[in-house]
Length: 122
Image 1 (cartoon, rainbow, N blue to C red):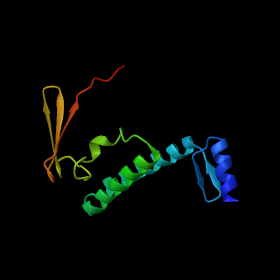
Image 2: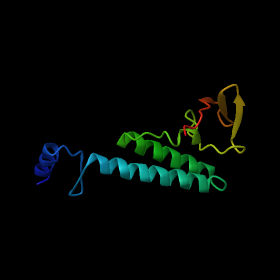
Image 3: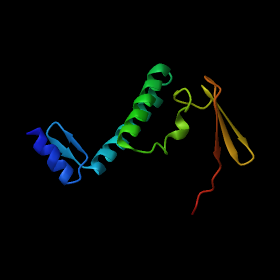
Image 4: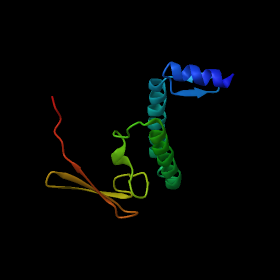
């Protein structure tokens, strides 16, 4: 029976067969983006009391993004790429502006991230 559904999903160019449901790629990406946004909100709320829990939320969000092939472009400045910690300005990160760059330094692992300053298009 499952073989039939997998064959049908392949024929219809659907990506996943989960517990009897056939899901389309767009639905999977939409669900993944919602879960990633939720996890980053939880990481922000939990940072003060449980920083290790916020780090775990970031790890889970990154795994979901990789599995569903979803970009974390909206959230890439919120976590350290080297150690995976959730970054909060003044608490565990230092932010400086030099020339036309924003320099963000993680105080846990001393990783430096540089981002261009962009103008908003109106």
